[in-house]
Image (cartoon, rainbow, N blue to C red; front, side, top):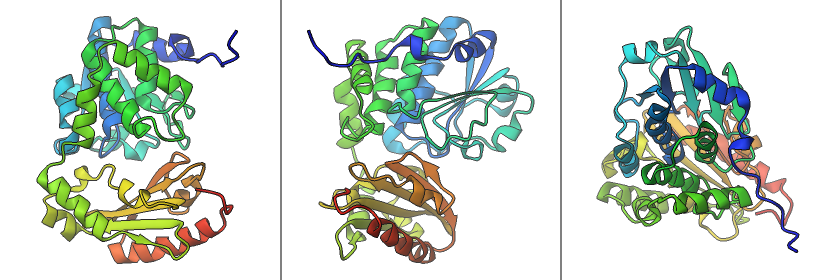
Length: 341
């Protein structure tokens, strides 16, 4: 007899009030976070396709230019079309996905633009501020896509090959191909079930990892060229200024997983990427290797996220922000155990 633990996954893990909130709604606004990643877009797309089965009318908040070119295949697979302001205001429920804080929603005017509409907050970030009337925050989940998969099962919706592809993209990216510490027996089981349901695994991997445009490739060259490593070899960081982004033909929406460049240096415990998506506004991506948490470091600068993957946004020149953050990061790494990373 096997002593392996049972994988806890499925519709029974979804809070009853979450299903009840969706069941009571007719018109549902689907909202993600600014600069949506594959997890966010996959979750949005899956609900967009599934909710009509339940007699619901979904409307997606997706301002033009906010989805990266590399992820446009997810938008196309789902057939997502951005709702108008009047359509969003006419909804009786707003489902906010993969968004830790209300100020991060991908909506002009934020949630204040939808007065009187109840909010269902579904997210897997440990720092989620519980800003909804209903809050399902699964900090133990690999991704919001994993949670949406369980939600669709609980609601009795079909997991079509297209829905499975969207959700698989979310799980795959947030676990970095099932290689990070947030990869659990549950997430592996979900990945397997999505593949069984017809997820186009090969296409997802090719689109995400082997389909760089010339501009994205040029941006990678910038990030490689700007990578620096601390003397002790445990901190690596890189940057891309607004001018460098523009010269490469990229924009803020194209910043996604380039932090994996400094992260790929052997022996590092913490990796950081600084990008200036617009003049004077710098996005900071923090990554921790092994069991190293970078959440506390990100919080020093008003950011948040996960223990191993966090971020922050600061106003100032790129040089000013780098000079502000790197000394704090070096002190943070110096305080880590010698075997961390």
